[in-house]
Amino acid sequence: MAWPDGRLETRHLFGAREVVAGQSRYGDLVIAERTPRPVIDEHEWQPGGRLVLRGSFLGAGAGDRYETVLRRIGSADSHVIGFEVRDGRFTIEADLERMPFFGSAIPLRDGEWTVSVRPAGALGGGADALAELKYDHGRLDDVTGERVAAGRKWYRLLVTGHDNPLVTAAPQLRRVEQGNFGARSLRRGYYPALLRGTPLRDQVFFVSWKGKSCGDNPLGIAEELRRRGDDREHLWAVTDYSVPVPAGGTAVLRGTQEYYEALARSKYLISNDDMQAPFRKRDGQTYLQTWHGTPLKKIGFDIGRPQFASGTAYFDRLAADIGKWDLLLSQNPFSTPIFRRAFRYEVEICEYGYPRNDILTRGGPLAGQVRRRLGIPDGKRVVMYVPTWRDNQFYASGRYRFDLRIDLERAWQVLGPDHVLLIRGHHHLANDVTAGTRRDFALNVTGYPSISELFLITDVLITDYSSVMFDFAVTGRPMLFFTYDLEQYRDQLRGFCFDFEAEAPGPLLASSEELLAAARDTAAATAGYAAAYKAFAAKYCPLDDGKAGARVCDRLFGS
Image 1 (tube, rainbow, N blue to C red):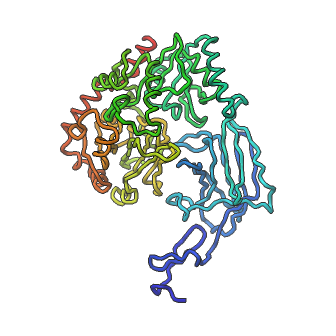
Image 2: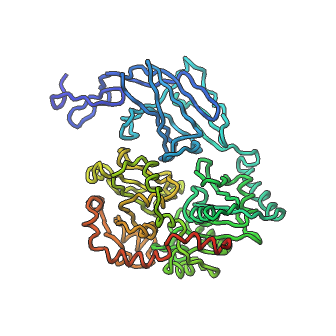
Image 3: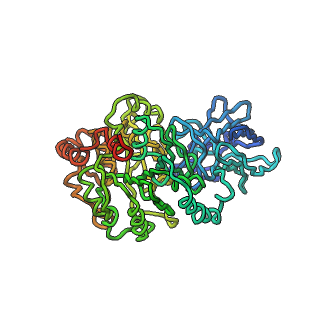
C-alpha cells in the first residue's frame, strides 16, 4: 500500500498506534498494538461516601501507570485520583467526601462528573490522553442510581445512554428547601417571620463573593477576631458544601433554613459584595460592606452604560443594598471620595486599609506551606496571571467567559522548566478557566481559597486592570500589565478613575510574545519603573501595614 509521501510513521495514542503520513491523519486506518479499555463490572458503596469501581483492563502493559480523572460537566473543575491495575483488573477508590484540593480535601462539588482514565503524567485532558470508563451490563445489573448519603450530600452512580458512568453530587435538603415552591416559601414566608419574631444573636455572618468562597476581607476580619480570642460564632454563607470554611466557622448553604436564620438573627453581617435579595436589615443589625478593591476601573453609578449580563438592573440591585450599609471599608485615601460619589453613600466610611492584605506584611512559614499545597518545588520561579473579567463577554446563559490571550505552549517554551505559571480567574469566570495541558508548568488556582496566600509565593504578577495590583504592590515585587485591549476597555467598556498609563508601576504590554519576554527577563522589563512603583505604593497602600483587620475590629466590636 502506498502512502502519500512514501513513508509510514506511527504515533502512540492511549492504547493504540495511529497511522500518520506527513501532516495528514488517517483516523480510519489504525494499527492496533493493544487497546486497553477499562470496563466496570463491579461497584460498591462503602461508608462515608467511598465509591469503589472494579473491572477488566485487558491489554495494559506491565509497568504502565494510570490515573483516574473526574471532570465536572459544564466547568473546568477536575480531580485526579488513583487507578490500580493488577493481572488485567483495575480498582478505583473515590472518597467523594474527601476529594484532593490543593493539598487538602473537600467533598465533591454539586453537579455531574464524568470518570475517565489516562496514563499517569499525561500532559492534559485531551482525547489522546483520556479513555472513558465503560460499563459491562452482561456482568453486572444496571446501576439504579440509588442515592447514597455522606456528610451533607447525596451521591449517585449513573450510567448514560452510551454506558459511560457519571457520578453526581447534590446537597441534602429538607423537603421545604427543595424546588421553586419551597424556595419561595422560605423567601416569602419563613424569612419574614424570623425578622418579626426572633431575637438577634451575638454572632457574625460572613459573606464572600455571595458564598462562592470564604476569603477576601471577610476572612481577614475573621482571622483577626480569632487572633484576639473572640468567641462569637462565625457563620459563613456558601453556595456549595464543598466550599472550604475557615477553622472554627460554620457553613450555611444559601437557600436553606439555616441561611435565612443567619440573615435574620446575626447581629453582625460582613460582606465584600452586595447582598442578594431578600436580605432586609433589621433594627440592631450592623452591616459592614468591605468592598473588594481600590477602583482603577469605574464602579457603581459612575458606570455610564453598564454592559453586564444583568444590564441596568445592576443599578437597582446596588442601590437597594447601599441603603442597608452601616459602614463601608476603604483601602486608602484615594478610594474614599470615589466610593462616596460612585455609591452615592452618605454614611460612615472606614479608611482603614484591607484586612485581606495583613498577611503580606508578616513573616512565618505560610509561604512554604502554600508552595507545598500547590506542589511547587523549591527554587521554581512563580509567575501568576490574574486578569479581571470583561463586562460584555458572556455566554447566552449569562455566565461570563474567560478569554485567555496568553499562548500557554509558547509560555512553556519561553519561560522553561524553572518556572511555574499560576492562572487565577475572577470569581465570575471560575467555571470557565483552563490552564492548558502542561500540568507541571501551568496550574489553575482560581479555586484556591485565598489570593493573598498566593501573593506570598508569587515572584512576578501579571494582570491587566484588576484591583489586585493595589494589593500586590504591598510586596514590592514586579508587576507586568497585559493590556491587549487597553483602548477598548478604557474608552468604551468601563473607563478609568485615573491615568493608568501614567501611573502604572510596570510596563504595559500588548501581545503575548512581548509579555512572555518580559516575564523571562523581568529585571530588564521593569528597570525604568522603580520610581513609579514607589509612588504607586505610597499612594494606594499607605494603610496596608498589617493592622487593617485590627482597626476594623476595634471599630466594629470594640477593643
